[in-house]
Amino acid sequence: MTLTALAAAAMVAAALVHSLIGERRLLAPLLAGLEPQDFAVRAARFAWHATAVLMLLCAAAVAWSATPRGLVLLIGGGWLGTGLVNAAYLRLRHPMWLLLAGAGILTIAGAL
Image 1 (cartoon, rainbow, N blue to C red):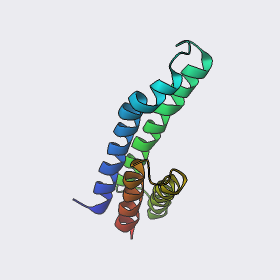
Image 2: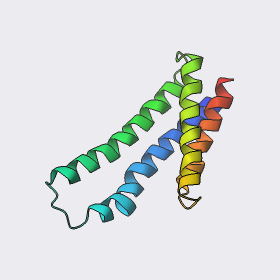
Image 3: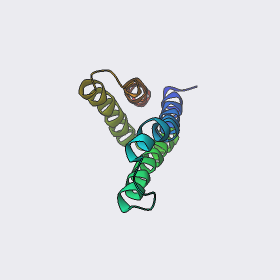
Image 4: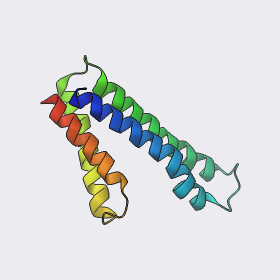
């Protein structure tokens, strides 16, 4: 398995963890007590899961052999940067930073 395939797998894992576990452990408690049909609740839930869709699109772009190398490097840099900012901002308390940064590193290494 190539490094970019591993990176894409890590991105898919991140999308699933974000969408499924994040919904249950973070988003639902934040929205508890609000009306389910309230605009803010619906917008927050949409944005939360749209992020997971964008993660899956990144995985597809990284795994697709016809994606320009520069774009793959840009995606990898974005994932690595997001992971590092997550680690610093949340003081290493949110373990997702490892998956985000790891996917970025694998992506960059695979593109080089």
